[in-house]
Each structure stands twice: as C-alpha cells, then as structure tokens.
Length: 261
Image (cartoon, rainbow, N blue to C red; front, side, top):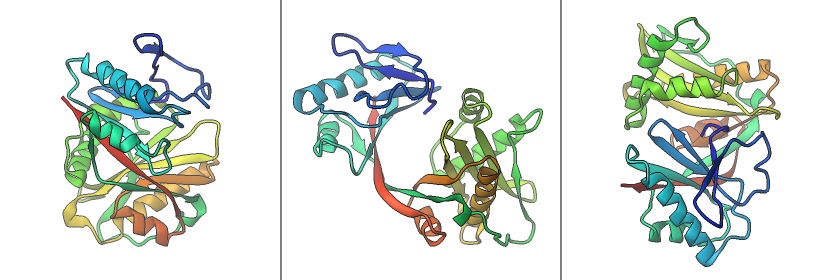
C-alpha cells in the first residue's frame, strides 16, 4: 500500500481522506485504506480497543468505502496472527470476506541474506527501475510475476509504485536468454533501518535452481548499501524455508481476507 494514500474513518460519519505526515498514524486504531489503480488494501498498526459492534461498524464502513467505487471489484484486509480482538477473522467472514492462504512474516539481519549464490548457466540478475525508460522491462517483469503467482498483475502496478515511492523502491529481475524468469522488489521504509522484500516469485519451470535465493541476495546487498540493517518479508510456503535457512526468523503470520463485489 502506498504510505501517502490513507483514509481514516470518521466515527461520526463517512470516511474522510487525508494525507498524513509520516508517522502520524502511529497509535491510531483506524486502518489505512489504499488503492493501487484497481487493487485495494486495508492495513493498520493495530485496531486499538475496537470490539463488538464498533468493530462491525468499522468493517461495514470499509466495505461501503470500496463498494462506492464502481471500478473496484475487490479489496484485501490484511490481518496478522497477533491482531486483537481475537474474533476479528470471524467478524470479517461474517461481513462476506473470504480468507486466502496464510503467510509467515519473516524478519532478520540483511547480512544473513547478502551471500554469494551460484546461478544456473545463462541466468543473470539485473535491477530494471534505474534506467531512462524502464517501461519495456517493467512490462516483461509484470508478465513474469503474473505467471509466478497465477493472478493478473499489470505493469501499471509497477509504474504507480515507482511514482509513489520514488527513491525508496527497487525492482529486480532474473533473466534467461532475455526471458524474465524471476522478479522481486526491495522497498525501503523511510526513517528506519528496515526494508521489505516483496513480490519475489519464480516462474514454474525455473523453480528449484536457486534463482529466487540469488535474487534475494542481490536485493539484500543493495539494501546494505543503502544503510538498511533489517529485512522483512511476508513469505509463502515456498519462500519461508529459504529465508529461514538463511537466518531470518518467523515473527508472526498474516492472512489476507478478500471482499469481492
């Protein structure tokens, strides 16, 4: 979610849009509602003391917020295993949201990942966002990411992220004979020693050859060069063992709940 795109619900009426200065949301019990074109996300530090009917009202207002935009067909409410209250998942389901696959949040020192990893013959790694016209490479990367994860991913998502997080995001690819076979992003959290590893995925026919691990190592080295100390990642069942063997630790879980029109 783009940090500048936040919507804080107003308990007395419709949700009010606001562009909050960095860090001003800390301690705020309300979620941030973000949009990437037609992809929408709900996130938050915590929900404060909201329970019962107050929490149901917040969920209902969030659904109304997204449902009012006829271009949108879905949004994702991302929960964590340590979220309170404990009945949040049941309340989301009662409002019609559906649970997707659980992921593990991994965290650790970037130095654990910044190691040399051998690549298969003919495969090379490259950062693609730092060139005069990255659009052709971004288009190829978006197509590879769609194949890797099995759901639509348009190049517009990459372009918007680069525009909104200018200077804070890097997009990396692994290529074999000019075919993008693996993609991944590095996103620096401004004002901290943290960065996130996002969107790391390898197309099916190239899995199991160390390419994801090599692309992760390249992003870790780049993070260290930026002064980043810690890396975090929401990891699938495929990437979690790789990161854990490299020294990152599981700290919680995260489960997306999807609303569909």
